[in-house]
Length: 185
Length: 185
Image (cartoon, rainbow over all chains, first blue to last red; front, side, top):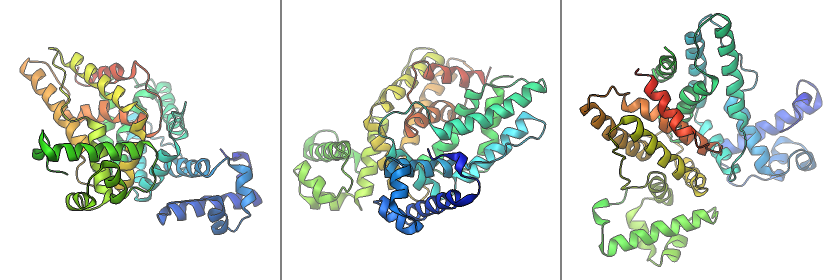
């Protein structure tokens, strides 16, 4: 992962944004063979910047894919009810991952990972968001499913649609949320 | 899809098996650019056989991936209890999709699908299997989740692990089954 502390503002932030955007453009154009020189040229930076920051092009691709599949800085809904929070959150995920370029990022991610990984930044980001909503609901005295249940039964089925390129119908997110809440009723 | 009626026994079955196996080998070897001539050479068949049967190499790749991700002819467990049936079935899926070559097939599948599809043979195969277990449980008078709930809450979370290359712990399948059954209790 790139050093996130270097991101807000300043030159290194602008460089990183240019690199991410260029990878996104190239992936979007269906570029098959991405290399550091090709990305550097598009981003208008020196290739050594890339060689220094990432061990190989797959690592960079995966990092961009993770960012695209989670949207850093997303705020978590806070409506006063876990059911409403989860429905809004699931709708955001559904809308977000239904965009056509998501399949390309997902492909980039699958192809970067041939060996098992211990944890995945996409999952960890979703886990933090779910934990925040569950904690707030617990504070209000609501019965809640576990964070893992929310990942398994709301997040995973939504990503399933993207992998298999199945359309997401508008009722899908609320239905998954009602299902996971029915587990603890 | 290839004509399945031509598969059991006979010359066309042997040819198809050779083609499938060759694609599997080439994908397994990490071949990046599969083409009909390359596959035909490995399978020892005439390239025209491939050009006649599939519109393009992606269609063939996807067909092999579907076969690899579902295992045609799998029998569905019949233990006399839906919970046990689902646990055995989920364990088979978990074991099957944890094999390292699955990620490669999944990648082949994701890359073959850039546009949304109306239905996916992997999902449809799992749907038929789930429907069979649910029907039998209904006949025994058991309360059952819907077939769609089994797909969303047992199958999808298992495939999620494959996409993101996360290991499947041995308790995962039974836990997902207990969750989906808790929805109807």
